[in-house]
Image (tube, one colour):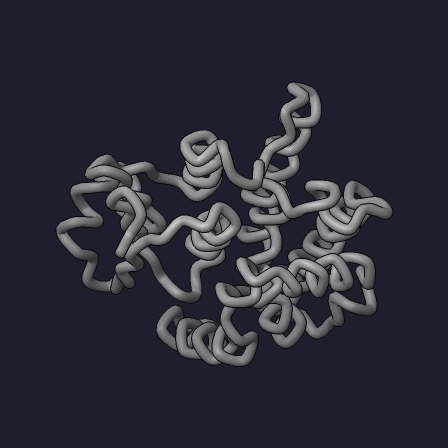
Length: 220
């Protein structure tokens, strides 16, 4: 039974939907996941997110909340008696939001270019993606998690892409572990958390999905 009427309009392969599932898991919130077919979107999705018409959408007590990072922060505020996902200090909170926004605006769009382009465009995207990963490594420093002793907003924003690393590596012809070993160790630490391990899909399943998607997109 979903907690307080919590429904997630979901998609197994979406790193954005994974964020919401991890946040709900960290808070121990039961919810109903409704898998969407983005080629045939449900009336519920179209009504709940009429602007972008995309997942994830969290429906709580009949009210929709859209955009993954906004949803994660909403979850943190509503269930504020359990496992905080953002620091209480205003400066550290602002920094967390900055780096989560960096992940949103850099990792997915640049990573997508790695598997949707070829030649010089792909080489440039790979170089830029590695640079972004190195910036994130520098921000992580010697901490176990970006959130400190426990995972927080930045960890939740970034760790779903761990299941996509293999896609980036295969199509970009590089090794994330060789380029950014600290980032891989961080991801492995996150995977020790049940909230993360039960959400992230197998990397080969994600890769197979992308292979089929590339065919549909006509990528050579």
